[in-house]
Image (cartoon, rainbow, N blue to C red; front, side, top):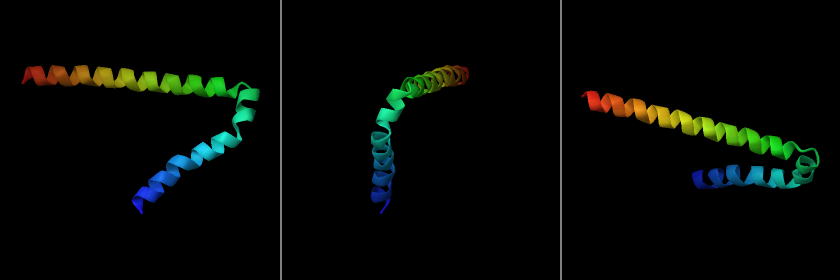
Length: 62
């Protein structure tokens, strides 16, 4: 049951995105979406990098 729900939650946005693809490309919204996702991933990466450095400092103190 859990696998089915997970599969449906992964595939349902893909079907919706396929229907709206031409609208997104036509209004240049796709570039904005890609830009926002890129910024979010860069932010998450920077946060994880800084968190890793802080954890290393704490481990070295002990």
